[in-house]
Image (cartoon, rainbow, N blue to C red; front, top):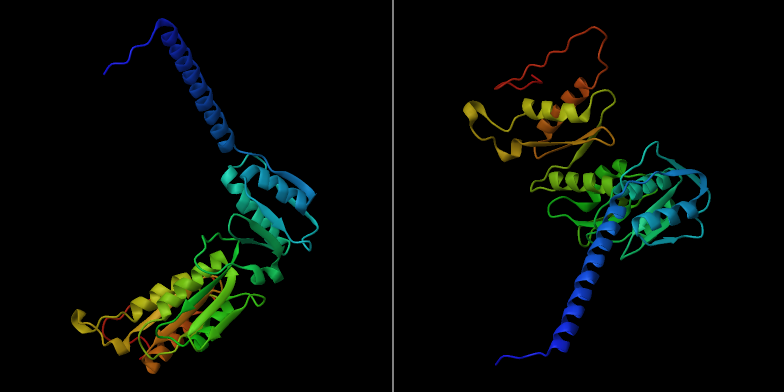
Length: 290
């Protein structure tokens, strides 16, 4: 079946088609302008401005919704010498707020700005999208290590005003801290919470770098026996660098080997003498402490 239209109807349809095409073109151009505006860098120039006013301005720039605690008061300064990407505006605000003793707690479609001491009461649980300057609460259920013992290892790595609690009934840890440190805590737990009976030991370093010393110790106490044979699992040692506190976390089922690793770490953690040379010799068969 073929439908036929008269001349008047054809003219009307043509007019409607032209209007629709024109509307579509205007709409597409509008989207392009809006997208360009949303990607355009901005200059931040807040000098001793009220915190609430700065948060409001950032909300308009980023499109985020903020809920400000009545106790959040004072002035703040954020200055950029040149325009910055809009994606950096929000993290910059969080860093400035943190310096003033305030914290951001991200929820469903809204960001709460509260005093840092109160942030743990509002911190979301579960699996949030972690942002470095946001406070979050995470629950870790341990499979092998004791949650109560793990508290002693992690406590020096978490600020005193942020809680870390153990629940023996479920062998779980509940940690509230900034997201960037939560990621480090999670890496440490994954490295330490392995099958075995050895308890983790924290070794703070005063002079040496944990990031440099950890691979050195790992090579010295390599997990290979003579002629490349696999070492007994009971002889293995786990060495995890904790960069924030510049410490080493050691774990081994063999107390004697754990003591040797700790002793060598302490011995290497000495100030470097000016003009001196340090030579490290890796042994394949003999142990370094003998």
